[in-house]
Image (cartoon, rainbow, N blue to C red; front, side):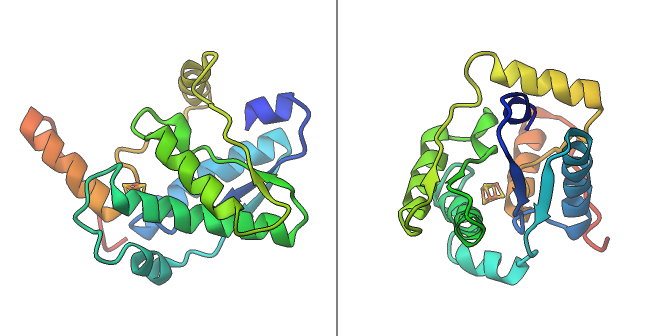
Length: 181
Ligand code: SF4
């Protein structure tokens, strides 16, 4: 967001994350994003939290590992909503922050972006590598400077289970989440 803002581009943040569970965790992450967008004067749009549709989109893939087919379905679901919003609002290009994390497979994210862009005539996917040119470090620096909430797992309940299995193996404290919140 900061790079795009500094480049003078007209930007809209489209927050589409029905993959974040539980809802309270979703609200925490959304609020951080919205506050930073407000600070920079960037418009912020919250997509519908289509939890049931998201679960339907990954049906049968629940036990896939992170970076596997469940993530492909998850990226496709969210990027399709993004491309659709862009098409409906005359926004010619969309990109995603998904690939900036070192936990993500950038080629997998970009393949999903290109695939959904092909569904919407006149819309293209910008496969900019946000990690390059010091981007990853800049993300860490901005996060520290702003005191952003630090997420402990990717988002879905399956990624939380995976993280906790890994933590257990390493003898690290487990991430505790209140699912009733
Ligand atoms: S691990 Fe992350 S990218 Fe993969 S399905 Fe879960 S929320 Fe989506």
